[in-house]
Image 1 (cartoon, rainbow, N blue to C red):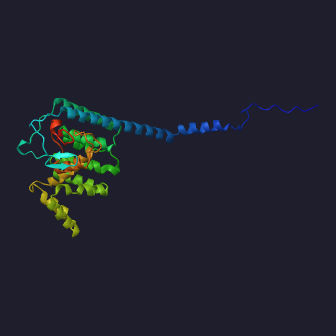
Image 2 (image 1 turned 180 degrees about the horizontal axis):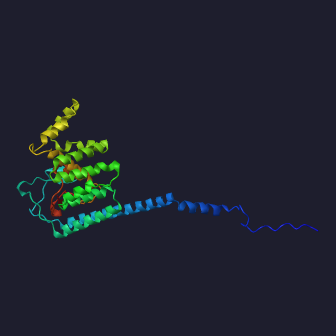
Image 3 (image 1 turned 60 degrees about the vertical axis):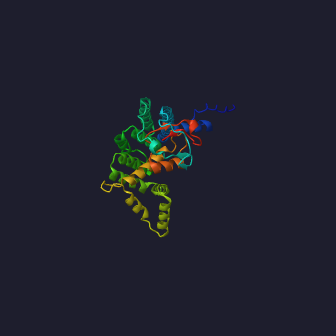
Amino acid sequence: MTAVPPRPAAHGARRGRVLRPDVAWLGVLVAFATSPAAVAAQRFDAAQADSAAAVERARSAQGRFERERVRRIPLDRWGFSGGGCDERVGRMCLRLEGGSDWWWPEEEAPELTAARARLIEQLAEAARTAPGDPWILGQRVVYLGEAGRWAEAERLATRCGIRAEERWWCDALEGLALHVQGDYVVAAERFRAALASMEPDRALEWREVGDLLTSEGDDARDRAVERGDSAAVDRFWALSDPLFLVPGNDRWTEHMARRTWSRTREGARNAYSMSWGSDLDELLVRYGWEVGWERRDPGASIGVSTSAVG
């Protein structure tokens, strides 16, 4: 008799079977995709995408509001007939119109007030999705301020949820709100905290007073630097305090408030329909932010980049 070899067992029937490589890798991928670390990573990526979309919505809403502002700006009340500029600062024409200056801006259109209220709600909604975004926080503070809701803006800055390395921005925004409300002493504390924790180059820029000085003041500052007088700027601010009987130095906190306001305008649309630049920054630091607007006849504004007047 001839021995008959045993029939091979069916594939996979034996213990310790070896899977095909593609099946084995699929199992590894499935296991990784359902691991706690992978699920957390997927959720983080989704949150990042949601945050980016929220910031983009906030920027679009802010742009729409500023375009609406331009449409609602009242037209030339004083019959401005054009002419030269008393000073050109970059793209901007600065005019000192003497007796024809308007001291109190017209009350804004109700439609613009309503549009700002909608913007504030849209920014708040975006902040719920992107709570740590510094640009959104800055917009919320300044537009609440425009609406006269400075106490609310202060509380918002105090509850700041920005990551630790950018905490200085919360201090600066809180200082801005406190300054406008007249609490100059506490505002100064918040601004000093901001200067102490921001990047050294930015702190140096914020402390710079060159835009405020006449040519004689520039010369005096240069002489102080040459002789190593590091306290010269402190003396400048002490002597610039307009009201010695009022606690705190409201001229210094005003300067810091203007620096803060200027930074909120970076990357934001404005009524001049210009990108934010050194010329707009210089004018804001020298004269403060706009409290009212009017429009000139574009045909009368020869050589001027925009018909909007802040």
